[in-house]
Length: 204
Image 1 (spheres, rainbow, N blue to C red):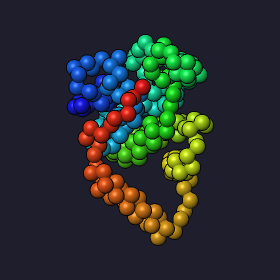
Image 2: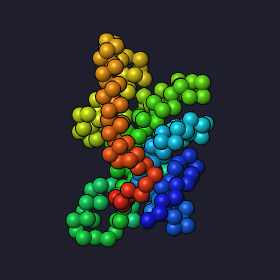
Image 3: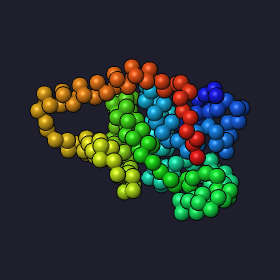
Image 4: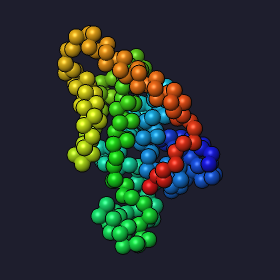
C-alpha cells in the first residue's frame, strides 16, 4: 500500500493514498497522529514556526490524554477501555476502534525527542516556552511500567529543569558514544526506513 504524507492543520498524517483526506479517514493513522507528527518533524529536521506550533498543539492533546482532536472522532469509537473489552469479549460489533483516550508510550517518547530537536532553533526564541510546555506533560501512571523509558523521560525532565547531575565529562562522553552506537545500528539494520511502508499495524 502506498503512503502519502500530508499536513492537516498542525499535524502530519500518514495517508493511505485513497484520495480521502478528511479527519474521519481512519486509514490515515489517526491513532498515531501525535507520534507521526512529532517524529516526522524530527526526521525532516523541521524547525519552522509551523513545527513549533505543532509541538504546542500536540502538547495540549497529551495533557488532555487525547490521541487526536475531537474532530477526528467517528462512529464506533469506544468511550473507554472497559466498554472496549466487554464488546471484544462478547463478540460485539458496536465498537470498532479503541478509545480516543487510550494512550501509549509512543507519543510521549516522540514528544520528548521533538522537544530536544526544537531547542535552540529560531535563535532560541521559543526555548523558554518549549521547556515550560514540556515540563507540563506527564506520562500517565499506568504507562510507567517501562523502567528504561521512565529513566530517559526523567532525565529529559531534569535537563529541562536545569538539575542534571554533574557527571565527569568522560562519563558523559561514554553516554554519548553509547547513543551514537544505538543510532548507527538502527540506521544500518533498519536502513533508516522512516519513509518506507513498513507500518502494518492497524491504527485504531
